[in-house]
Image 1 (cartoon, rainbow, N blue to C red):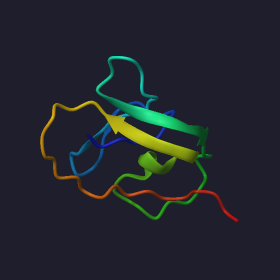
Image 2: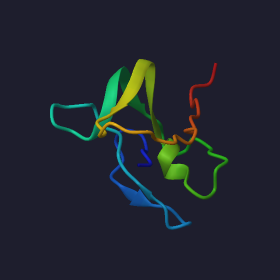
Image 3: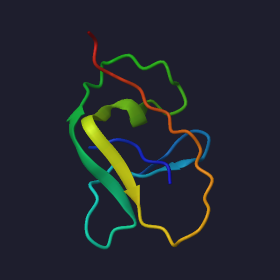
Image 4: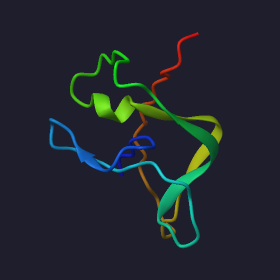
Length: 88
């Protein structure tokens, strides 16, 4: 799954890749976030990623992880891209 961050519905980017909205892990769910908080970003925030800028309009922050309910087995996991949108 590709997960975009909170406050965005599932979307298809310009490359045709489908992104799912971030969600908290719930009983019986296939995947979700555990912990952390979410916040949105204003539409005027400049985002360098021209292919899928909507993905970075909000973020999950703090101490969190993602869980995936999968059958026993061996899985290959690709690195996930995270961006910090807070200016400090």
